Length: 102
Image 1: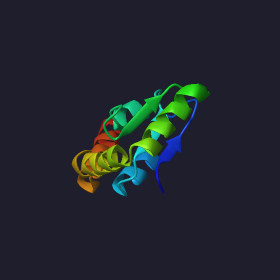
Image 2: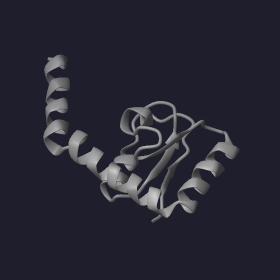
Image 3: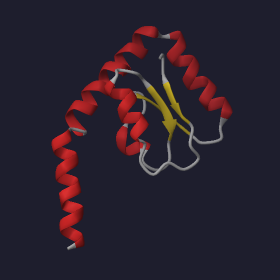
Image 4: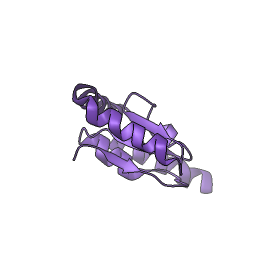
């Protein structure tokens, strides 16, 4: 896969982004909701306005034209996942939610 596109109009989190990033796949996602908390625009992929076909096409073309940059974004995505989305961090966050509910 050359890239993952997540063109949601509203996206609360974006687990598919994390899964693609773990596989070193650059991502293009909507710039609303959870994706801006997961990726940095221009680093692991691109954040694009929802419903803006021209902006989506431009982001896709940038990845297609610059294969080296696309590969670097994929590597950056993998690094981001390894640093910010570990199993230990997920368990810790879930425990915090349970503690606050108690």
